[in-house]
Image 1 (cartoon, one colour):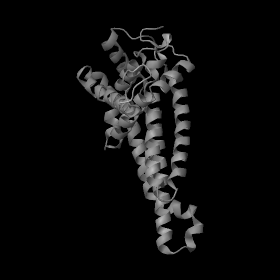
Image 2: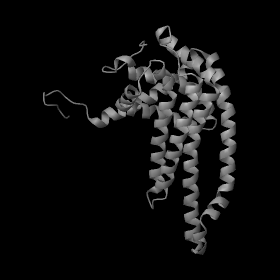
Image 3: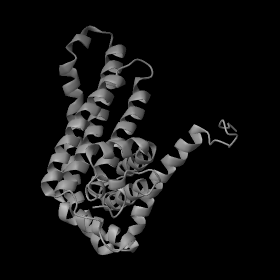
Image 4: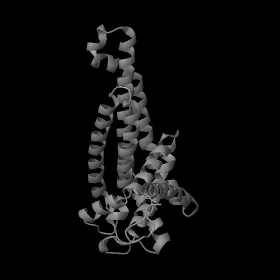
Length: 270
């Protein structure tokens, strides 16, 4: 075991990273457990998620059916290639495009669902904060702030989808690298957006929030990736959204409770 200059044992970095990833994923599990605390609020959270989910499923299915023709039109230069290479290349392009669309869909689904279901998810947030402290620490971000945050999230999702698409066309390792990159980028965006209400309620400055997210980046990533994996299960996005809102509140609280958090970022601060 590595030791510091003072002789005290030092936890290996990998172990700390894995621990933080696990802590983040466990917050989502605790969010699911909140169904026992306030099933009424959680049930209401299913409504906007189901509406938005239906729209996105329709869009992805339509894209899937039309993608072969779109790829063929977009790659006329491959028409003169041998059939084996032409087909393989277009399959790779189709997979990469669909992967990028899936990244954008995850992010946009979360952003739009939070805006559409703002009153429902505020109730979940209040219930979680009240269960922990007896009183919410302040007001949430509000509807229009949520709209602005959703717009920023969608733009970041577009950039992430483009990066995934570019990496995906790299020979040999592109598909695997794009899948990993998509999971990381999407997980970070989901965790940041879902926890924004709890952080806004405590009046964090932009610099304080960035410092907090940077310091606990692995914890937030673990939560975001776990949420994304649940989204991949059939109808998982609908079932997961209320739990993700509850879990993200607990995630934010756990980060704010750690020693060294900025003064204005501590629970109960106004």
